[in-house]
Image 1 (cartoon, rainbow, N blue to C red):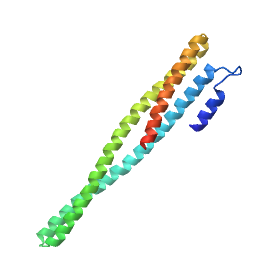
Image 2 (image 1 turned 180 degrees about the vertical axis):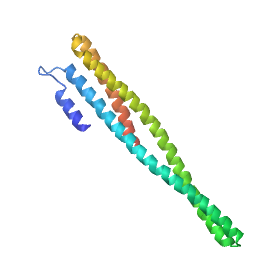
Image 3 (image 1 turned 90 degrees about the vertical axis):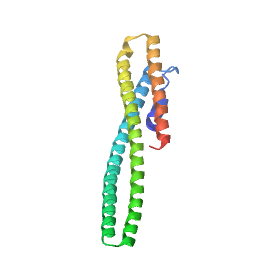
Image 4 (image 1 turned 90 degrees about the horizontal axis):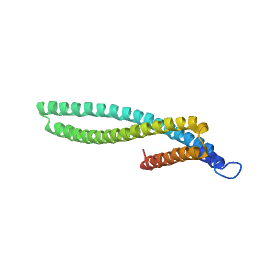
Length: 169
């Protein structure tokens, strides 16, 4: 993303020292594509993390059930001390399971947010591509208006991207 920003800064002004609408549009389109690629990578990583958490949840549920069964068997054999220890261990395993379920819920919330952002980004990329196709057909004022629209949309999405990065997900 930093490389795209440096290229954008270099291309921001035309030969005459005035801003170049075509360069701004191109920069905005590439920024949107880069943000979309980052977002897709984040969604893939989140899916991997979720698969790991789901596996740990299943393992923890099995452990909790086994410990409860062992505690009941210890009670039936008359080993109250062993049953108490097993139930204490089950409580700890259950607490870990509860934490995993909270993490999974947070991941679901983050995934929903990222999917919404992906949809918006895909719409903006498609719009920028369509506007780029119309770039050569309008007059200077039309081109400037189109460029400002895409650049402003990209700046808004970049703010969302920054918020996401600052959130640590």
